[in-house]
Image 1 (tube, helix red, strand yellow):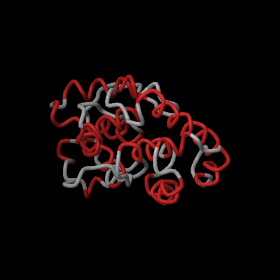
Image 2 (image 1 turned 30 degrees about the horizontal axis):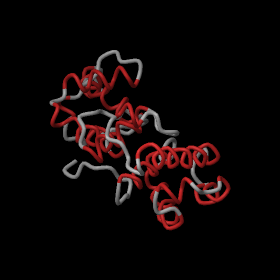
Image 3 (image 1 turned 120 degrees about the vertical axis):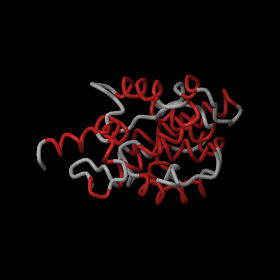
Length: 199
């Protein structure tokens, strides 16, 4: 994956945090369809903080969980405006205080915007890292995050997140991984197991 970056379209940290909140249980492709109109209506934290929930809902209703996300987005914008002067913080612990921002989202923002050495673990990263053998017996996303951060060089962590996501999205797909197209199958625990089994 020579171009390893987020597929969410954004112009600044505010736009990315909105897109990341919308992307929970929703594809990046669909979020990218929603955000242009959203940002025309709410170009900054101040305008979003003052928004009515129903207006936000109308713009994001085709997204998963639009009621909750509308409330989270307005709450997030309000907190950014009042507590952080409209700026998106770079610290993961501060990001976690924002409505609608969980650990994965906080790590995405810290890694993408601020190039912090943090690993966001979504379903793709969780699955791919286990299949490849980058993690061992990991039962939770936090355990996966800790194992990956421990073994990946610090200067590669933020880009490794994208490598794993994109590999999981396009090659090492959930139901039928494209092992015959994979450039790293020779190093893969899952592929080795298939070969040993004679498949």
